Image 1 (cartoon, one colour):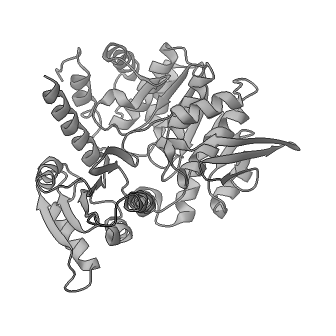
Image 2: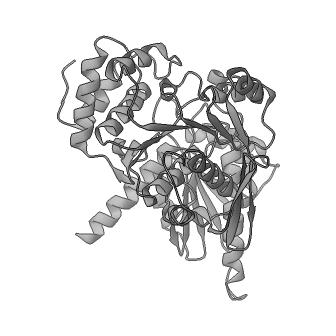
Length: 448
């Protein structure tokens, strides 16, 4: 196939043609390319992060802690919102197009005729980019499951499992026990596995025991507690206790982000023999961490919130964030002012937990604008609206609108928006990525 080898876009189009299927869970193909590239293994420590929700946030905080500690850290996450380069960062900076293209060429030479998927190519790119940048540690987000995910070609020095919920059931199984077993596959013998599930599933614990991994479970080996504007972390290890009080709230949030932050701190401390981190660098790392598309506030008046949440657990977290945000906003308003209208703009993929996700946030939203995601997995706005209506009582007063895409919905909503209103845009990386592109284009046009 002829393509533009001098552009990232050209390479992206090309690597999508290498395998007939978008997803094929197997390590054989990607491992063969990895071993050609690095027969003696990669020259850096590896922290692999699996879980249903919270992987990106945990990866960002861990990366930020290492950056503040003076270590060189590579972070691999997926998917991206706007640019493919977002998947790969070194000390918080996105890799350049030139470095990416050079890594593409290296992998293509090593791949020969091995057919690998788009995501497998991405994981290999991370490995090559981080080796070239001479990082001390790579924080690698697992894409799907764990046991058979491309990232699991690497042997994790520390494994993290953030959460377990029903997602990707067609690939991972339709019970929490089956999904937990797949996630536990990233653990390695005699190495720590940090677990953010207070009561880990039997399948997970059995697997960790069978391979002689070392579990560190929340509320057992480590714990956290929340104060008004800060929080406290504790780790119990080998009879010793590490305690940090007065830590800054991660992303200015409590709730599940405290769990994610505690996972990041635990992993960093468990590698501290070779990559030391101080309390000061942990505090600075948490304060400096930022991530797009997770309860991201784009505007305060009106309140505009973006979130990539796409399953029941993550949309529930978004609902709690909105409830707290709206409550604090109402408390600050003079009683004579109108109550806020909450407007939802939602687009989702067909294979996600659509009904469960809509149900857990439906009570917060007054007007619904459903959008079509225009790709093979995307749900139509009409299909989303039909599922939403089936959840509502007869003669409900919520207004429902249908749109061809998220930009169309956002432009329509803007026509009647007041400063007291709230707009929440959620349901998919595709939806949030498209709206960020639109908002950035508006800002660039205004500055010309």
